[in-house]
Length: 252
Ligand SMILES: [Zn+2]
Image (tube, rainbow, N blue to C red; front, side):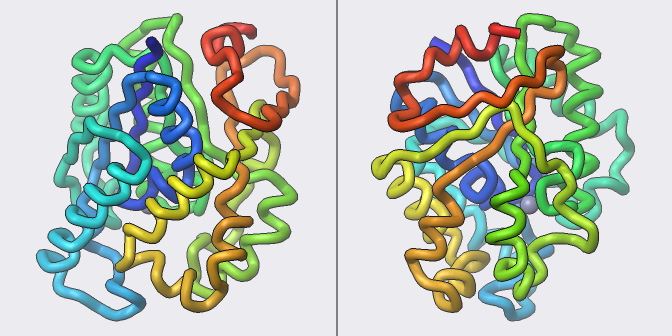
């Protein structure tokens, strides 16, 4: 059994960035733990301003539903300030991530690419801090996966998503990947359900673009293995769970 630790900045990141990957891992029988650094209180509620305490409470509930849709049963939350994660002393954040690494003992750590996927400063600083924590942890067998955006995905989906200012100016920039996951129907259903569970954040997209767009947007996920020497493109077709994950993870 592989143990996977997903490290995210906000509730909904896990579904938006890697919901299929996480659901596939659960289906395969792997242990999946998600850690969220903030409660997401700095966002909007259905595009409207919302008191932070109220939004944090809403998003905690939404996160429970999102994770349930993906089958993820282990979650931990750190209450760092949403929108200011890059202002928190690095040593503090790295220490908390290190603690999680020691406690969870993951074989695979999954987080944002260096560009933060959307370019959000919280995402970018977290990606860097995860790398630092891994260096301190110093477990060479553990693999790091960065969730990134492919060129095709960027061209097709970033412009409409940016009608809602999802991506920061100049982002995303990580447009090559080692692994592409094509979600099968079961994984796609789980991921779309997880996205829909994050109602306060995702409802505007479902309302504006409809289910077909959301399913298409959610149907592929791309990952970069930043410590790999051999950057071969690897396509995972069809049923993702047939992939020999251990073999792939250690092939390089
Ligand atoms: Zn986020």
